[in-house]
Amino acid sequence: MYTQAMDVAPKDERKVVRSAEEAALEARFEARIDEGAFIEAKDWMPEHYRRTLVRQISQHAHSEIVGMLPEGNWATRAPTLKRKAILLAKIQDEGGHGLYLYAAAETLGTSRDQLLDALHSGKAKYSSIFNYPTLTWADIGTIGWLVDGAAIMNQVPLTRCSYAPYARAMVRICREESFHQRQGFDSLLVMMHEGTDAQRAMVQDAVNRWWWPSLMMFGPPDKDSVHGAQSARWGIKRISNDDLRQKFVDATAEQAKVLGVTPPDPLLKWNEERGHYDFGPIDWDEFWRVVGGNGPCNRERLAARVKAHEDGAWVREAALAHARKRATRQEAA
Ligand code: FAQ
Image (tube, rainbow, N blue to C red; front, side, top):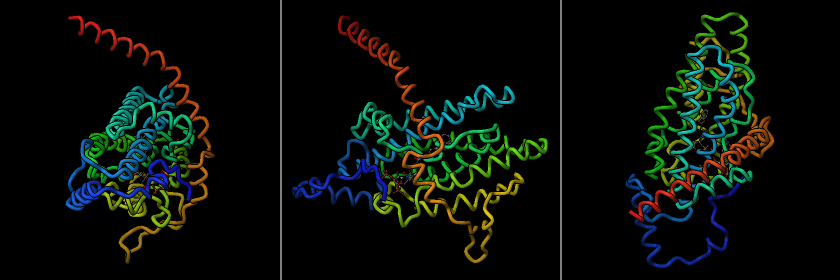
């Protein structure tokens, strides 16, 4: 299975014999996890737990800032002042989410520079969904409805994640994601119910393109999830990839009826016995292609992030110079 393996301890490290003191610390840690207690940054934690969190939180942070790019493509072309203001607020929120999450990852002892280097060198992942293009205005509403909808489904359980700084960051993020989902649904609702035939066709086309990639956001099936079982054991992930995906399909299939769009899945059907919607097979080859760097926009997205970082070098230098000057003045006073 493909893995960037940022959280997996090197083989020789796993062989190291633990001291009695370390074994006692680990037993105490496991007991606290079993009690449902939160782990704080200053608390002792196993190295593998730390690495798992750095991997997941940094991937999440990268997803937020790379996720600004597909929507940024439409900031200058929003159809009305109201829609433009909403879109700009949403994109700014996503930048803010990236900052909270980088800060949460930094509490685990990895610097922002290290995290960004991993993104820029292609070593770190970000969500597969942001490697798809935004071709029409309807894509923006569809991202709000489906992509933010999937993000909320995945992220609400993270507000109960065992690592407290991540859980705290997720509370505020989820509130903002909820507004993001609603604005997307509202934008599509207006086009579907008050728009022209061409606008309705544009929405249906966007839903056709974003439906399956949104289902892929939850990660591979549970049987192929490399980290799922261990993360569940540690209370990092509270609900499995497949269960979250099912919850998402159940919710969005009903919302699609309100909108009047048809998800592009002939097998999508309510199953009375299961109490859930059945849905068709997901193209996991496409998912792994995109995750492996060969989606429609991977290269463009990474190049845009690297350029933004390089273009911003003077801001970081100026901020550091200012901080140095202030410190010197304070010392002199
Ligand atoms: N894309 O063993 P698992 C948003 C990788 S934020 C790319 O199941 P895990 C807001 C996974 O990393 C969206 N790679 O992994 C927004 C692992 O590879 P690794 C981001 C993926 O961590 C909206 C391998 O596959 N949300 O949308 C994906 O237990 C609109 C095996 O997978 C988060 O990051 C994928 N979709 O479960 C912004 C939420 N799925 O690392 C702008 C936090 C899996 O070994 C606009 N993250 N992989 O090389 C999570 O909940 C988890 O990390 C999962 C994956 C559920 C994503």
